[in-house]
Image (tube, rainbow, N blue to C red; front, top):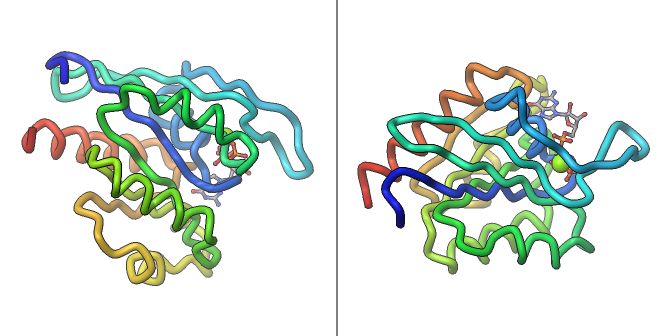
Length: 163
Ligand SMILES: Nc1nc2c(ncn2[C@@H]2O[C@H](COP(=O)(O)OP(=O)(O)OP(=O)(O)O)[C@@H](O)[C@H]2O)c(=O)[nH]1
Ligand SMILES: [Mg+2]
């Protein structure tokens, strides 16, 4: 891994909050998406960049729809670390579980972003029970830029410390 840069790929199911997270940490980020029933959905990728802990962190967001598997495979090439965004306001779906176990198997540092904690009925504890083997885990609302950035900074610091 090159010392001064880090490629982090953001995974998660449809509407988990991946694009919102990247927008929160980098307001100048770019998003290739299209209108859908309730807002927009990513059809290619998101890209954002931040500097933290002496590293230039390149953030690549993936599409959440299952049919975009090809895009996910291309985007994850050469990743140094992965973040999995999970919507805590509903039950953990099978696609999220598959992403999780594939990422555990990939042996890159994996962080879980337990998202939408601002929603009254959210239940991060339920997600922690379903996806148990993760070292880096953060409860956030991607709509709140300061806590999104803080979670990313803690993840980057953890990666830096342990490599
Ligand atoms: N209440 C709440 N809503 C959120 C949060 N994060 C994202 N959302 C909303 O959830 C919806 C989907 O967010 P996106 O960021 O587009 O989700 P995504 O994971 O990029 O979705 P796809 O690209 O379609 O896979 C939008 O309406 C967001 O405003 C959050 O932390 N809290
Ligand atoms: Mg998106």
